[in-house]
Length: 120
Image (cartoon, rainbow, N blue to C red; front, side, top):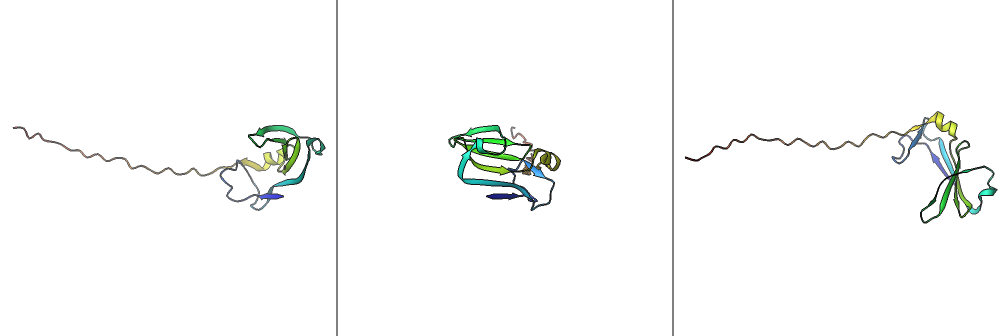
């Protein structure tokens, strides 16, 4: 089991932040030692995406209940409990990160050079 907490400065890869104090539980990920079939799961889930590349994991979810499951060969390997759709709508917002300041390039200073011809 892995518990993810809210933090003051989220990781730049985070897309959704929450208006709650730092240290609150954001999600709980439960990995099962013994997998079980998707049909045996007590919540109805909808296909989201997958299978992912060479690992063959497919993602299912129920946004209204805040449940996401990762399925391998028809069996659930892990489940993530996260904010429901209404909680995400009420408390969530798009994370904003300060843009990395680009180095200011100094303009090239040109000198006016006059060349006098030395022809006689």
